[in-house]
Amino acid sequence: MDTNFNQQAEHMSGMERLEAYERQQQRHGMADNLGYTLGEYETGTVTLHYQPKERHMNLIGSLHGGILASLLDTAMGCAVMTHLEVGDKHTMTDLNTKFIRAVMSANESLTIVGRVESAGRRLLSTEGTIHNQDGKLIARAIATAIRL
Image (cartoon, rainbow, N blue to C red; front, side, top):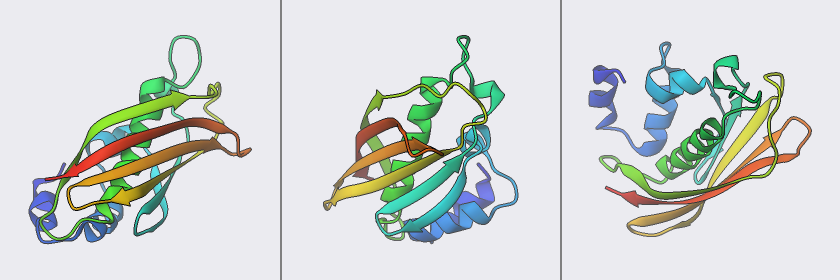
């Protein structure tokens, strides 16, 4: 990630960091690799949109489960960011993912929603879902984040 962005982010709330990162022309790290876009967001809820990439398909022709888990982790992490104050950081302490249905085509548009279900002083409980363009559930996850 851009060092300049990290220095600027130290003086932003989580919501401000999310908005500033989304405005960047050049993506870095996992955001660049995954290629999702930020959709709607508000405190505690973030929606991402993702079009599968051929490079993310596995040897049996389905979208790799690690990509689905990464998208869920990202959406839930972004939802946590909407609760963070200036100077706060977070990390996930666990991630439990259930794969419901395979994504067998790079033509299947996915919507990923991350939500904070409970925001305590240190721990935040999150849940996430992935649905395809037909509204069918692809995967769901729960995770816990800790403020650092």
